[in-house]
Length: 242
Image (cartoon, rainbow, N blue to C red; front, top):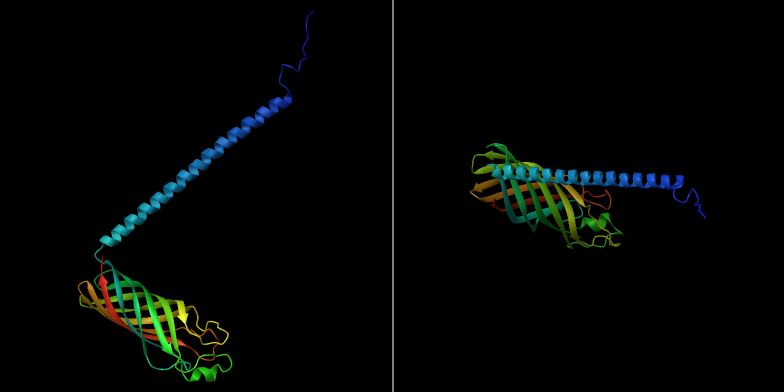
């Protein structure tokens, strides 16, 4: 007796056909996305390689130039804080860091630096008078401020032996040692702008310098009753290492 099978048993249904199309489309999209992602990664890596190569070439070009040099420096600070709250005399501190010399020609160049600099001062008689009721410091108490100084100076070469320097400086208060207020709050602002002027004697790779930093900002973070401004005389030696 002949057997009969259902017409749908061996033939694909419309649902099977649609599923097959969806799977193929999904696979195709996945392949396209993978190719795009691979292209993006390759492009990004290529950009990084090109930028790194350009940076290396630029740095190599600068370092080979006759007017580019790196060095280290250090010396002493004689500093005070102007204002009625502090004693008028200068106090000793120190500074240590590095510098870069970039000469555009034989006469003019710039000198960026990064220096760790210590400022020391003493509380004066006026502090308790101005901040009576909130101030805890007494006359003679020492205050120490540690700054990261970032000057960018114009270099004016007056021959091979003498260089004049002038420019702005921004200082970041890294930490301080003071107890001026009863509530323990910080009395000093975290940033300070200054104008710098000085001179340097060039003895080959050895540099002997002196400069004066005039504070332009009020570093008093309590209020504006008394304006505090840094004043600093620096002198020291530098050594060109590159």
